[in-house]
Image (cartoon, rainbow over all chains, first blue to last red):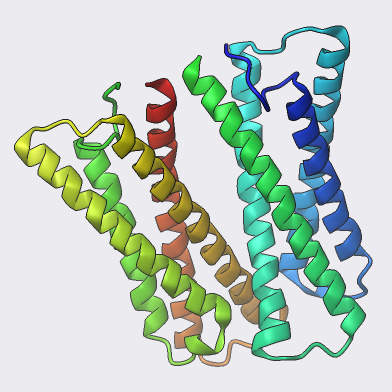
Length: 152
Length: 152
C-alpha cells in the first residue's frame, strides 16, 4: 500500500485524528453545558454522535501514536477496510447530527427569532460550529482511507 | 479504467441516476405542495438542494443513455474527476438538507407535538424520506466514482 500524507501511522494522520477528537469534544462540552439541550432530540443526537466520534478518533490517534513510536507500518488490507467502514459511518453520522442541529438553531434564532437567553444561543451555535469542523476533518480522513483501499 | 456495475455508461449507472432524479423530484413535489414550507429556512434549503440534485442526476442520466445507445465508453480521467467532484458536492448537500429538515420535522411532531394539520405533517415526512433515499442513491454513485478514479 502507498504511504502518503494522512494515512494511518503518519504525523498528518495523527494530527487529523487529534483535530477530530478536539472538535468533537468541544461540541459535546458546549452543548452539554446548556440547560435545555435534552428538550431537543437533534441536540441529544448531536451529543451521542460526537461521543462516538470522540471514542473512534481517540482510539485511532492512540494507534497512530503507537505506530509512530514503534516505527511499525499498519497498512494491511483488513485493518484499512475496518478504518474505511468506521470513518464512513462516523462521517455520515457527524454530518447528519451537525445539520439537524444547525436546522433547529437557524429555525429558533432566525426564522422564529426566539433567542431570549443569549448565552444559551451562543453555546448552541458554538456546538454546531465544532460539530461541522469535526465532520470536515473526519471527512478528509475517510477520503484518504478510501483512496488507500482503492489504490492498493 | 475498469468497467464494473454503476460506472458511467452502464445500465446500473443509468438506473442509479434515474433513481436519484425520481427521489429528488418526489421530495420537491411533496415539500412544495405544502402551504407553509417557506417559513422554514431548512425546508427552503431542502428544495434548493433537491433542485440541484434533479439537474445533476438528469444530466448524467442523459449522458449515460447516450453512451449506452451509441456504445461509447466515457471513462476518461478528466470526465470521471468531474463526476467525482459533482457527486461529492451533491451527496454532502443532500445529506445536510435531509438531516436539517428531519431535525425540524422531529422537533415539531415529536418534541413539541405540534402537528395540528395532519396532511401537512405527512407531506413534510414524505419529503424528508424521499430526500434521504435520494442521498442514499447518490452516495452509492459517489463511492463508485471515487473507487473508479482511485483504482485507475
